[in-house]
Image 1 (spheres, chains in turn purple, brown):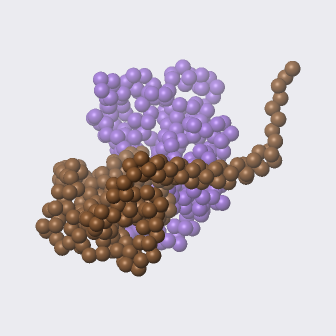
Image 2 (cartoon, chains in turn brown, orange):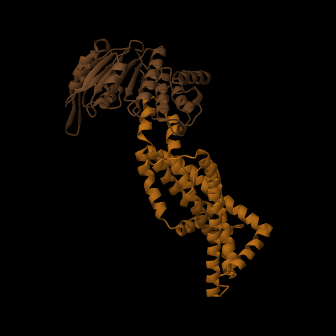
Image 3 (cartoon, rainbow over the protein chains, first blue to last red):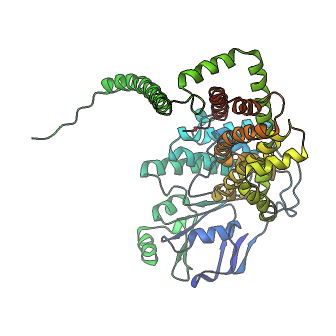
Length: 244
Length: 267
């Protein structure tokens, strides 16, 4: 279960959230849809633990790893790759740091051997269509390719929850569609069937990717509507546009 | 009438191929001409002053330089001075980077070391040399002085580099629980490398100046500084200029080697 419980957050005198509560289904793709500046990224960062709420709590309970914390991965708005490393080394930096026990006192050895890591990286790059760019420098790749590397990094990390912060925002329509396909290929291929929570302001992106859509609007922001993929229709789209 | 844009890809390709080496050749010629211009200015100054004891001619200096280079003992002197400079430089770079990283990451460490660095930055090199003459053997004085002059430069460069590490990359590494040791080598050190390289290149010139000054005052055996002093006492300005030219060339060579090895563009 992933739940935000009674969360409040202020930036200066501006109240972003006031007693906000929402629950996200496990092993599903959930989308937080909202207009620019409504607080989507802040909410995602609160969920991911990158930002603390002023009050309230985030409950992420795990049945599979009772002693450890849940592993999370994150696809940021920008790729956030180390520019002095090539594609392989960027992914290997994350792969070699995956520990056996995931917790605060984690001193265990890495999960993957060198051979396993190389295999894993090759597999991931094949899924995102970058198998020929494994040893390419980042300066040789386009923006879309870099975002695909970032996506493969997130899937390579054995996380239970994947957060995506408008990762396809800067791309053109053709590239966006390619990235959606890449995302689905990764998601379908993923043995863990992880829980995905992503934020976007793009209603068609939400419709294409999400099982559940949470509409965030107002000041302080509230969840003003929750819809499942099956409920989606043109009328509902108009209704969501009105709410935004 | 509509204007049309016509592309000549093949022509463009040929142009690019020819233009780059031609620019390089032009730049080389430009450098040679500038050097000749300054030598001409030097010669004019010599003719105006017209006193060999005050100001030697470029030809006389070149002759002395050739004679020096042909002498076997000169290379031993150069070797010892290079050794002292490298010793001072390497130790200041190693310590400057290690302490700089620690201080860049930890505010308390920075607060402890910063007063020392501020004092070192403002201390006249001659004060350091005189204190070192009291404390050390003459051959170690240039090393100590060079070290103290270069350490603050490398330290400040490293601290600036660490502090300018992209916070978004730090956040990403922390989120994916990258080990501290990996973060140090893969993120902080690599990100501060341009700052470290820039500070090392600056430190090379300063190290040569400090070492030469310390050699003049402490007079160790086999040192360029001692020969500068002898040139002064024997009223031989051509030798003084020739030894100075050797120092400038050695500093330039060391800077160029470092820039080549580290991939730093000193321009």
